[in-house]
Image (cartoon, rainbow, N blue to C red; front, side, top):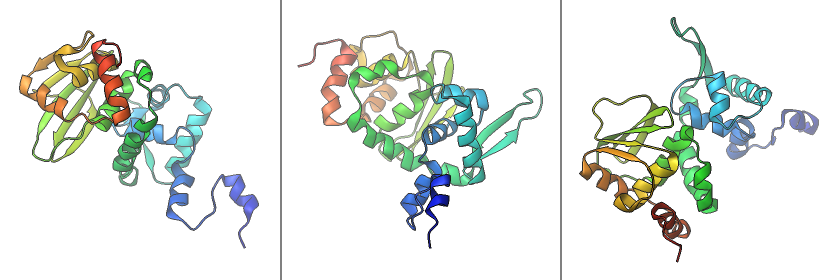
Length: 231
């Protein structure tokens, strides 16, 4: 017989269902946002806290501990001169990458265009991976720089890989606030903002062609990107 007192203490659904089992492990608040940040590479605890939106440190500590116990993340000590402990996804944890991106695309059904000003630079790579859907025959690299942070997108075989850091001879470099970078991709030369674009014009055209937004958002996003009144 199922012991519901034990189930409630563990905050588990206690169901013989793989969806319930997944939610038992990643369904708590902040858990998937931790995964979102670690998909870009290992991070120290303080960086994880900032990356997810400055959540309470005691809550993040518990989430990390629980996901480590479930084999979703692990701790690793970096050698000198870094000499720091970082958290990173295990192989099982990285299997959340595609489901998480698809969940984000589904979540755009509820995104309001005025929220674009609230996007932080640490979230920019994930935002681009959700709105860009590349064809299988395109291969290119994109350097992102936003508010002191650098990221690399690698597009190949219909997939966009992302990581922190500088690229070597990227095809395209986009630099600016998340709003300005998104505006350039959505509106191109008509975009309003201070984004800096360097690289091949063909690469920017190709990247713009990959933007896919829900119909509800498309016109609002274009108006916001160009500064034109919504029709």
